Image (tube, rainbow, N blue to C red; front, side, top):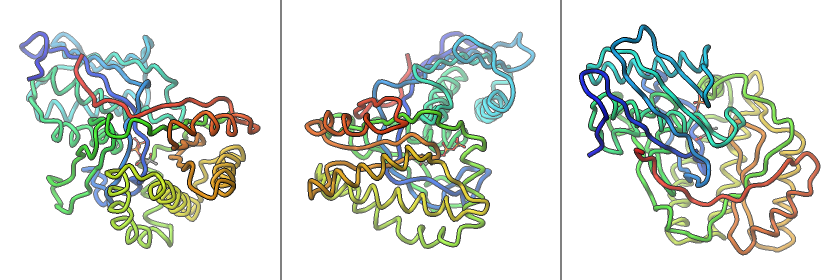
Length: 338
Ligand code: DP6
């Protein structure tokens, strides 16, 4: 069992979590207060990048404090973290304020999903420090309240976040589909775009305007269960030829509902679009799906491929104008205490 250091409302714990990239996107909540999504989603937790967070509840404190990479943070990020701790205090009965010390080994708010690893690590550290003994599934439900995508970062490898149907959200949780060693040759080539604009609106807010205004939102909802079933099967069989076209189909569907949102949501730059076009060209020339692109609510592009193709794909994409650099990532581990 995970145990906190210190007692009597003064517990401390450290937890580490990695970002994840969605193969099937979460975009739209049926209940924003409980962060209950309309559709299930599916992701890959990544290796090499991580957030490490320490939470220390301290009866002497007069407010929560958030330190990011050694600097005190104020404003919306600190407010969101403190609101999240309120949920932990409600459940655990701890009444003291806390210091949160967090560090990312990759740029924050760079479009590399720091809110997923951030809230997964915060959930784990706060739960242990407050004496809550949660299973990974329940921890995924807690992390979800901070950032929906964080629910998936509790597990390693390929992960599904089940939307569930209950109004109380008891059947809404993440679960592992295949661990990080299931498909050793699976790669995510992250294509970092120059001058990627930083996100102005949190996804949680932007997605609700899609639900309200995109004429294609509920059409997309009808497609998703079948697509998830096919993607799950392809992952289980390590079948890249089936999987890659499905991932691109899903990404195109996500982009379509964003672009048809009023006002329109366009997260890509001309360089991001050139990356998508280059992946299509690579596949057309090979007459088979060598790679698959996806992107979240940001300009960077994730290109899935297999280890044997990764060097060639990186060389092709790295040459495109506006591409700063590429990283080659694999499946990463579950979130865990330190
Ligand atoms: C497009 O749950 O990360 O990445 O914390 O408000 O930024 P915020 O929302 P978050 O939204 C994720 C949206 C997505 C798709 C996905 O990861 O499934």
